Image (cartoon, rainbow, N blue to C red; front, side, top):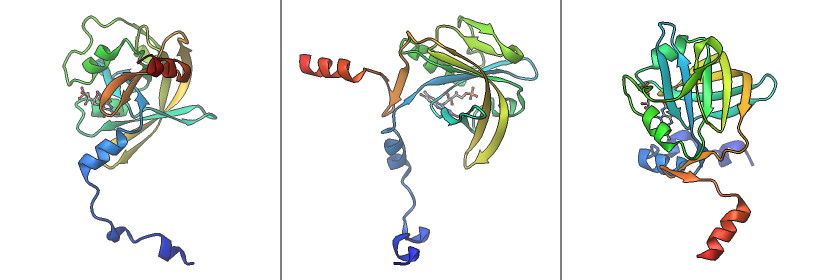
Length: 183
Ligand SMILES: Cc1cc2nc3c(=O)[nH]c(=O)nc-3n(C[C@H](O)[C@H](O)[C@H](O)COP(=O)(O)O)c2cc1C
């Protein structure tokens, strides 16, 4: 059988429906991270992302992507360091805060400074301190690949989950069985 008979020509597909695409992507649960940096002109930046993922163990690389419409994108493209703060399940209000295009997202937010003066959020489930490795313009987002310099993990914390457009809690399998059987 020739490969032509099993791989349809791309022109055979109608355009992907944006609403269906969002719904299908929402079936893939993710954690929630706030990526933070200090821009070259001294502004603290932070943005909620669910596009964080692991990429490579050696060298240790992770990735996230930023929408080309994000107010802060130009500054992200030239910064010298990032922190990827993995939110714990009690931190959904931080996620909401850093998902808004506010001029000041930082008032009242507890943080300390790390590598390259980058703000590091407190009480998160984990934090990756990184430096830029590569950037790729991909469709309507810019893909940031970051090299991990340092890892901090709070194993007592449970990560915040984002799925089907909503926040959720991670229940270990045994606990979720118990929760279901109690209903
Ligand atoms: C759960 C969640 C996940 C998000 N993931 C991303 C993402 O991966 N990339 C992105 O560009 N925006 C993402 N956003 C939206 C940004 O956080 C939001 O547009 C933010 O205001 C951009 O910041 P800025 O405009 O101040 O630069 C997400 C929002 C939420 C609530």
